[in-house]
Image (cartoon, rainbow, N blue to C red; front, top):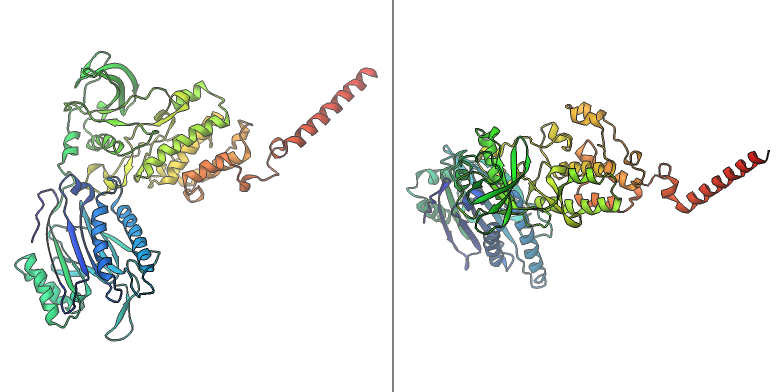
Length: 576
């Protein structure tokens, strides 16, 4: 039966499966075309699996692959990319199949299956494949096999699988993505079909059949007639329409709301009374507001009039609320939905009492190392909460970090975030502007290169360095550096040079996190935090470590001896 989804992305789907000459059907296939907004956010999924007949649990394996993938994919975070979502599911699924298979080794059973997955999201197709089932694409009359069979031929009539789900504890899945055009037809099939039909005949049936249902049935019947002795299954997905680059969904319509006027104390906007202006910049304004009905205090962020004609800015502004609602961390500010239908464009968050870290540093110019470590650990927890959702903050700086009571840290302002799952969608904001503050941004941002976790690490390390020393690690020249060569000419300034209380191992951790080349930095934020708090032997070059840190007892013994000699010398001078 064909399926037509009334949405910006519209497809038709048909499928057919037959046990053929075998006693049971060990193939499995499925397709889910969700409603909006899930269709735009996650895409549609079609997949096919072929349980290995030599493994007695092949049928259970193929059905498990299809059922679990379809069940789990749409439960992954909206902010994850298709690749991340699928690979995490497939890795867990493979481990389960492999573990189940180990229980039946003595009985020569195994949970082994091929699997080919097609995800169409926005204007792109994502393919995940292992085994010898296949995915083809018919475009403008040309049929192309998009997957590569993972098998080896040992004779003219016999092959064996070299890769499959559940075959090994480690999983090597082929991943491929490509653009989609209207009219593209994707065919997913098991080897009982494509091993017995020439490619030219498959192409003819896809082109000449009166319907997709008829096409699937003819593919199976002709393969049977050609001598197929295996299960036969196929699925056809035709792309009827694609979303435009300005897809009209609820989120986009929200971005079309008018900008609010400049607000002042006492004004009421959509049921929120302005109590105080908290912050203003060229990009936005933030106010402390009060719900006139519940008296709850919240923070309201409004867009800057400077960007009223900038559609990309509007989309980013709406994205900030959408993304932050999907982050759950005590160190990330919580977004609130408006209590009433908004007439203007704004963002509401909980009101976090405290000081921006920039003001906190002014009030605490010489914090203890322990206090700085406490703040850093909380900041990293907040940033990692974003990273677990495949989201980069991209503007980590002291003004976006609030220090509350008992030095509680809250990360705010997500207007510059890069969200992997959103970047795959057809949106104007897919090409994001570089809004990161130059003082704290890594060289790769300044050079217009793609960011990563290591890019965020650099910004955090700059903040830590400034908290400890009141200075910047590369001096004032860093802000004016523009080329790669100029960046590599910069020289790191050791933190103990400005604050002798910074241990040498902590400076070593900072220096590594602040390397100009991302490849030389830490792989993970957790490694950086650990080395800040625990002496790493790699940073303890005794020729550079002050004696007071290397051997405190010897330091004070030497100091006492020198003072004693000075006193004796002074007494000798007095007695001359």
